[in-house]
Length: 284
Length: 281
View (cartoon, rainbow over the protein chains, first blue to last red):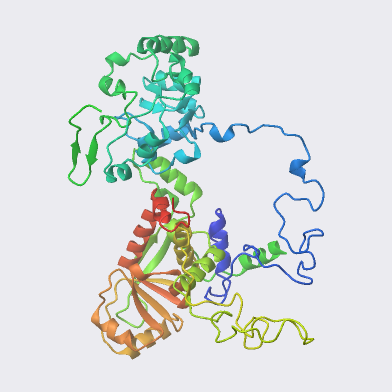
């Protein structure tokens, strides 16, 4: 008998002793379709499960003449302002290592939202208040790559894991318009619009992005180098000198706080058809 | 009860063993760490690759010309009958336009006048002789022509439909691979007796990688309604189920495998689905 270690092997083995599959003997899974008909008589007729209300379709949560459950208790604002809060979909260090190992990310160039989105494995929805990616520390022990990465949120352990390998991490804010351009750069360039300026962070995010502990993009660079040493001492690793690194130029490459794409200033139009860049004559 | 059924089905003596390749040959001796990891993953989590005989068509009797390895993700996929059914249903429905039509009370002829006074006659009150409760009246919520039933099955279900059906066909011994479609004569009796002798069932679908096929087989199968030729780009779930046996040329099998594997690994499938989403904003 063939090896039956895989479930599909077992299923295929069973099929060998069953009649030939044809148009006449296939069917969908039972109950996979929801019936939308309002039954009559014994098929949930009478009041159609609506208490004493005969004809109306009752609103969601209505409890048939009782005080509905969701109105029975006083207002408790757990979700106050929830629709305004910024979301940062997580990417683990383990995933990041997998992306690098499988050549989906180029470590010889700085990594940002655009390079993560163009792998095709992640999507970002700025309309749903997603403001970029956060790196989380799962797989920090097996992270081995030396990268220059820019994310929107990162924990202390993540920063340590990246700097231990001689890499550079930076947290930066992008507004929704900038993220729309970054989530699909090709689509954005095809629209033929000049690249907009990146907006400065909102008031409640300024503190985070100007804190050198978070490697914020608005923080003082000298304070950041100090914090790099502090973190190395805290976690007990020797900080590799990026000045001596052969990839030094790549590792120190940063964007201007008003810039969206690496190497492209705001106001530039990228012409994909003629493969050229059109620069504005006056400064934007 | 289900367990009993499964047990009985598995006990049925196997007429043809799955030809399986030794695992060691799959793992290439490459030093590339990633390639090794992938191979380890495949040998651990994928079923073993299938092997089929490459047969001939130039004699009525079967000659086995060689062996061919088929990728388990395409030809040994989990058989999902429900996905097969959804594919068939979609293929039937997406180009179906219902021309059933009925007239409303407004479209019916006449009926503008109040048939009798509201009061004083002892009869029920009515405003039009074409109201839906009248004999010969209009129909409410009747079918309106044309009603299209177009919809798009999600990309992954369409892909899974193909792999599932190919796997089922192979598992049930209804899939054969031939070297090419060269036959010695253009006589239709030759192909009929070939199918008869090889026990391929009355209806056969022959798939080649190209849509221009050898002259002899084209002429021979032209008048037989139950033996049909099809290029790879036309392969679909409905046709595979409609015919008893599926015959692929070696080139076609390779092309199908290559195309399906490419699509299984693509990361931009969401962009292809975007066009068919109802909410376009």
